[in-house]
Image 1 (tube, rainbow, N blue to C red):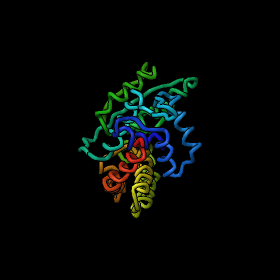
Image 2 (image 1 turned 30 degrees about the vertical axis):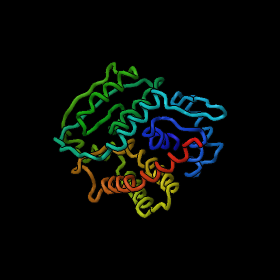
Image 3 (image 1 turned 90 degrees about the horizontal axis):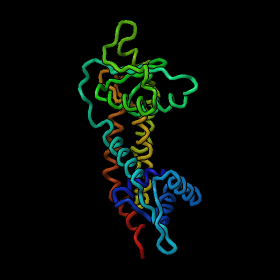
Image 4 (image 1 turned 120 degrees about the vertical axis):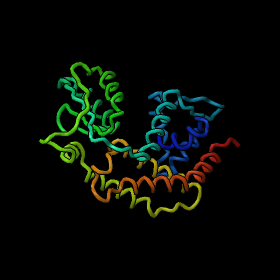
Length: 259
């Protein structure tokens, strides 16, 4: 939640905020002061924010790593589901083998490929309908040192497992669809009253939305079930964000002023 606050309010406002402002913002979304301060300390330990003391007050500045993380995250969050290119029927396929003693690397690879929209229809196999993400897959394999013996190629589904079967094996679309419906139900009727309430609503909105790029492979429309709720959720996110962002940022800016 603190990362969401930093990305939505601190990053666009120059990259710095007082401790009190962050604590008050977290309080607006139901986070106790003790937990908020612990979250600030954890991000500082991770090198994402750095402190600058001004008398008895502390101002937190995004580090280069923190700014890069939030900028990349924002690009993925706000670019997600905005375009749906025509699919030519070919799959991007990655095969890899990771020894059991390196299962931590295997877990990281699945995380990184999953975030890039890959699914896993079988052990040591990842697939995506996005052919342009080959460079992402190769970089992940190389960065984790497990590219030896891995292969990346493009091809069409065959007789034993057609397109629909590949989708069924690689992703749980039923569960994903339920998550989108829950998002629609939670935020569809929400009408924050006041700037502080707008900050709370916007923070929860973005925090919930930012989960979807990790689990939604952005499949072409002809591979999705009828009545798929993903685009309706995207439209709701855009509408709510557009309506709430100005009052939410106004409250944050007022809270961060030095008297």
